[in-house]
Amino acid sequence: MKHQQLILRSFQLTKSKLCKPKNLRDKYSFSTSSNNLKIIDLRSDTITKPTPEMLQSAISAPLGDDVYDEDPTVHALQDYAADLFGKHAALFVPTGTMSNLCAILSHCHERASEIIIGSNSHLAIYEGGNVSNMGGVSTRQLEEDSNGRFQLSKIQDLIRLDNDDHYAKTQVICLENTHNTLGGISLPKSYIDEVGRFAKSRNLKVHVDGARIFNAATAQNTPVKSLNEHADSVSVCLSKGLGAPLGSVLVGDTEFIRLAKRVRKRAGGGMRQVGVVAAMGLHALQHHVERIQDDHDRAKRLAKELQRFGFYIPREGAVDSNLVFFGLPEESLVNLDNFSEELQKQFGVKIYGGYSEGGRLFRAAMHLDVSNEDVDKAAEAIINLCCSLK
Image 1 (cartoon, rainbow, N blue to C red):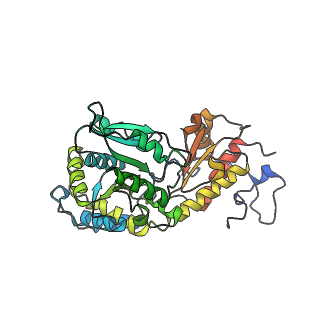
Image 2: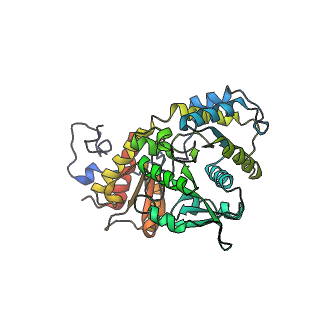
Image 3: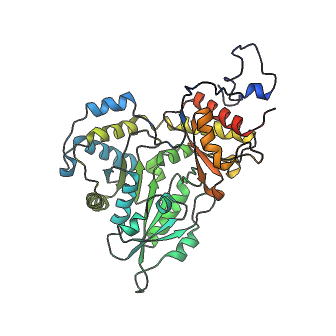
């Protein structure tokens, strides 16, 4: 179905192609009489299952002990990622949270260090304060603007040197791309370049939490190597938009990765014959990047239809990537507290809520296991649950 056509036409009360709906209620009808509703899971892009090709790559992967640095498949993944991002080296770790931790503690291997992070960032909200309680690194939180960015003047105000005994020394500026809680916003190359040059002039490092960095690159039609040219390190999640079952890769210069590997060991991230998983991550990097545009198209498709029925879409309906944040219509038939539960119970659609703007926002994530038909069904379900279509 072309984007310019109205979506949701496939679920009319009648199956006859010759019979047009008499009114909107006929058109937007979603039967809940079946006890065998297909579950459409839009909670996150982390819930995907490995593809058959991924599983086959794991079965055939050559293995070794990665703690001894002897797993050839891990080497292949790390070399491929480093080359892809134009960095000297890479490190495979179990999770994105550990990847960020390894990055920060590698950059801050000196004592009494401090980093600047966004107050709405994943680092600030969803990683358990680990850089502080595990690494002894303090954080200064700066609120991002509506585009997920910091003003350089405000960064400057937070920078502290080690020439005063009262202060921890500022070492790193952390960016998130795409920015999750602010709507899956893609930070442009021009901005990352600007922050990178600013940081270098002040002897600081820039770390990019690139959990969805390929979504950012896709949104801008820019290779990740170019996009992150002025970033000192990038954390890349393989289990989100790329669809691998687990794992992240951290990229940076050789000495940085050496220190990060030591942090990984202290954090319990040393793994043995982990090539069985690394093979699936490598397959994802090699085969699943180009298809990310499909997720973006489906996200825009969902947002456009919800907005048409009075749902609130932040940033005047702009959707940069695979994430759609939305608020219920003013005259919604269901309230915030019951929406997610009723949507799953009645229609088999799973969505998370409680996001920013006073907890009024819900998030739908497009991913490898979501089809155009799933998006159409999800849109129809949300509209039916919330809107009077008489």
